[in-house]
Image (cartoon, rainbow, N blue to C red):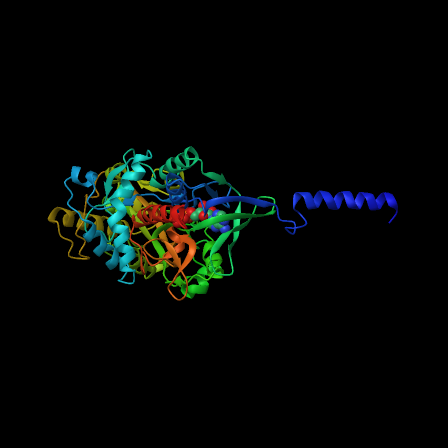
Length: 475
Ligand code: ADP
């Protein structure tokens, strides 16, 4: 090396030293926050807003180019009992009945303490959300619920997008720093097992490290990662999913590496009414408003408002493993749940039941007989065939509508073990200092089967707890 090259090398080395690159092994340092939230769906946003409300400096990392995750796809609404909106409609309901329904729906595999936390805090969390600008006030009845308690947007449409929009605004207003296309890859811990921060990669694949007093994992489920689904439940290999493509279970893998215990990993929910090959969900609320399910022979085969696992099981026993959700114009108008573009394009209509039957390829006389019989049951208030008690409406006002559906992976009840403070537990059942988790990434809240409408309550109730606890961690 001649003198000039030596000088150049020294200058470069000094520059690298000054920027810290030599010392940190080429990692550009991220910033120091009080709380880093991983994931920008409903759980992550509610945690971030709540942590900021409690005075924390918050950074939220989202791997996708947009916020929302599976929450953005949530259609019907938010379960809460004893609300003022139920009272306005004359519905008597309590947190205890909500608790009992949730335990029963989950086949008593749920952690009762977590369910208690969910059901006792749902009403207050609903008010918090509505205070941020959502208007979840319209009551719907979903499967497995003793009373109608799912709160949907007053103006109709999906609940999830409204929630995300309002929480994103609140987060930005409160100074939460939101980094999109930033994928968390590791939760860092010190030698005592206390959380120190998060490693991530930015959109150019560059590594960034964030320091934090506390970390909230809110990365959602793994329904879109069929390899992981099949690892925990081999029967579900190759199934379609309703999930967004970022639902790959990253948080579960990261938490496990940081010492977390996992819970209920085999409990993966399939939703019975999903358009084959499209992943488009036909919400349970359609059945709540009066739709029935018929098979390829034009016959009913199940009590349509049983829990999702049971309706799915019954559908998979039918010829071709599919069914049709069948309703009339009045039910469609009332429910307002199949009006999104992707759903509308899957609907088939007929001015008469015979015309509809021909279009969907089921025997017309059988379909007419099924509907006539069912309308009689609605009138009598009794369903001797399947024991359906909630029959909101007859199917009699044309045009008539049908949509072909089959079960698909919808929600992973499986996940990280937490306690009622949303602290992540290690394999000995002790809280990992500074580590919190909320939402679909956790296990235990829903047991073996989640009730419709309980996901949104779960992510907001536990997201808020995680945000509050994380903000005060170490004080
Ligand atoms: P929840 O209903 O529990 O809030 P969602 O699916 O709505 O779950 O949101 C989870 C969010 O977390 C999604 O937006 C998803 O893209 C994001 N996410 C998943 N893995 C990572 C990761 N490794 N880093 C950052 N964000 C992630």
